[in-house]
Image (cartoon, rainbow, N blue to C red; front, top):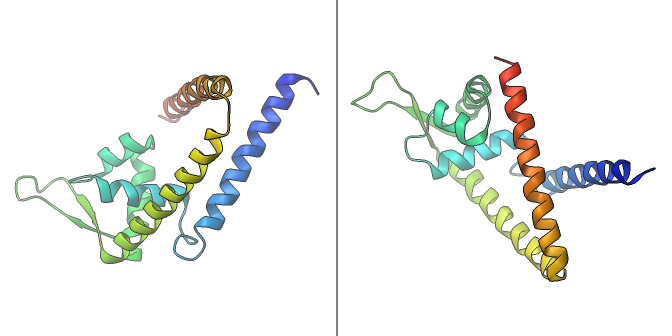
Length: 155
């Protein structure tokens, strides 16, 4: 196996391990939710007058995917919808008490994970941190381009 194959394999292993860890951390409160739904709830909790367009833009998802997710969350009682007096056409979302509990649980787990990751990264040398940061920034841009290409191909 050459270096490129090793890097690809290791990256996939890290992603799979992170996904498995997310499922473990979300057991109980979050176990019936998809990753995108939890992040949608999180964003609704942080966004004033959250609507399909704002959510889709900030989550890099299609409006159709957000509509599907919000319909499920409305049915589950996680969010409620409303309209502003000024704009009867647009539908906005806010968290219910159940949604707020999910939001707070997710926020707590997120902060705990950030603390653990920070502890891990503190163990690295300055050179290792700088190399990792540069690689992650490039990887993020690469993945962002992949997402945009996929988004354009589905339109």
